[in-house]
Image 1: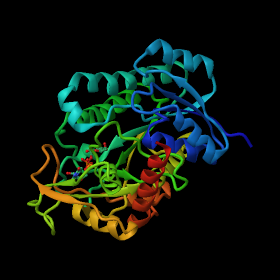
Image 2 (image 1 turned 90 degrees about the vertical axis):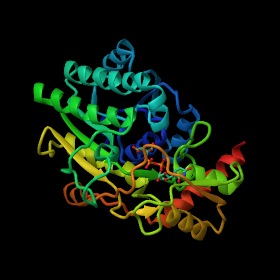
Image 3 (image 1 turned 135 degrees about the vertical axis):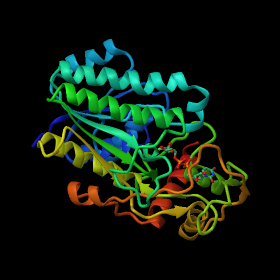
Image 4 (image 1 turned 120 degrees about the vertical axis):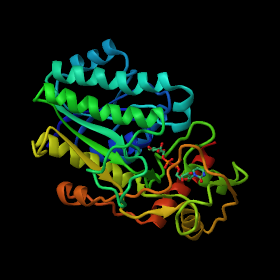
Amino acid sequence: MKKEKILVTGGTGYIGSHTVVELQNNGYEVIIVDNLSNSSLEVLDGIASITGKKPDFEQIDCCDMSAMERIFNQYSDIKAIIHFAASKAVGESVEKPLMYYRNNLVSLLNILELMSKYNCPNLVFSSSCTVYGQPDKLPVTEDAPVKAATSPYGNTKQIAEEIIRDAIHADKNLKSIALRYFNPVGAHPSAAIGELPNGIPNNLIPFVTQTAIGIRSRLRVFGSDYNTPDGSAIRDYIYVSDLAKAHVIAVERLLENRNRKGLEFFNLGTGRGLSVLEVLNEFEKATGVKVEREIVGRREGDIEKVWADPSWANSELGWKAETSVSAMLQTAWTWEKALKNKK
Ligand code: UFG
């Protein structure tokens, strides 16, 4: 049976592409809208090689209202939107705040306006654990206070959640699920899609794999004096395909009218915190490859420790992160080696 059409903005990006795979594997028809600012057309081939189907693709910037409206006219039967398209580099957002506010918020405003206008009420929104800042209580639950953002990027996610809340308040037809991601890592087991960092990676895992393969001479461990057992910062690393699967469940929940309020929030994490040094240790154990490292000072804007209480997502969505740290790091390594072979 043919399932509904889902519009995926940012669908050639890292989390977006893994989600498109899961949607197609569950029989959904996917239309990707992406401006390719941080991804490439080859991702579509990767998706096709896994699922046997190339999704429809439109190279469009979500900030371009008339182009987006054309999509809603052309595909009149879009049943839900998953909105990934956004700029996501924390450091860059400090340098270029206006670009971040424009990209991340104008795109959302356009989508919400079109959802109302074209009676397409279901939105899954990519949010982030950054909205919690440094939580007072760990593991952090969805009702923890949203603290002042430490970067324009983080602020766009907080403001976006507020914009969605207000839009839903005004248009009772609209419904949304905001998924608050912890730290997504790894690649599809086929190594046909994965993370494609632009230039020098900011994030830990691509930097680790690039160091392991010899592109970088050593990893800098940012901070050794945090109030954690080994002094390095703690995060909740979640396998990207586990994260992707939660989007399929969220879409289903919206389509079947099972969300209880207009706007719901879910933490997508494993519930386990790992320090940077523990991640390096796990990577070396999982792959047998040594990662040269240097302990340096803290990175500005970093929080000390955060990990999820995912029990609300576990019970309400019936979703659970299943992949072990070792397995997710192995997929990241397989992907890095596959990238090398492509060059
Ligand atoms: N880290 C290092 N060395 C590096 C890179 C990172 O020690 O070279 C440390 C960081 O200091 C941090 C941990 O590894 O303690 C994880 O850092 P990431 O940059 O991978 O991820 P963040 O926790 O900083 O998360 C940020 C945002 C998220 C966003 C994510 C991905 O806070 O909202 O980046 O863009 F989703």
